[in-house]
Length: 232
Image (cartoon, rainbow, N blue to C red; front, side, top):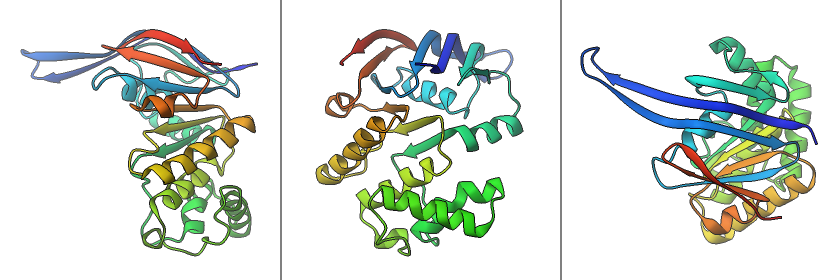
């Protein structure tokens, strides 16, 4: 298997305050990590452990202070904002706890959005978005607004939107955090199917039962990777 993610001695330091009284927060301390193509990995740790910072770095929403990040073999460590946005749009899919759907857009239009930014013709956007909604079991909800969908359906729309560009890496931040238990299980079953189909998935969660759906759990504390637990 080829590595999709390679981190080499990654540090992230946030600085705040005045020049005379500057405060440093060391969010990541020398994290090195490889995630292979097709892997399903969870990240766990207490609040402030660095797990969200790590996910943001993987998603090119932030940059490391030092160290290297290779995404699918390409060094993306020092990309400027414009270049990082292009890679993010085409190579990385995001699923968030809060869904972040556009309230005035239908499910179909929400899934089309990443393709709009890419400049694809409307007919091609609609075809791809409709196919993805069908794959997540929402072919009968394409014209519904987010307000007309359940929490689990909203999250499935968000997953379809994340997958519509066929990204190399799917990142999910507490994807079941706003869902009831039944809807949460639906979403986890969808992740299982995506993993079985060969998608590379990284999930941040504080729930052990969610993490145990993955193959491997990365345990973090105080900005360090303290344990790499292989489940299967």
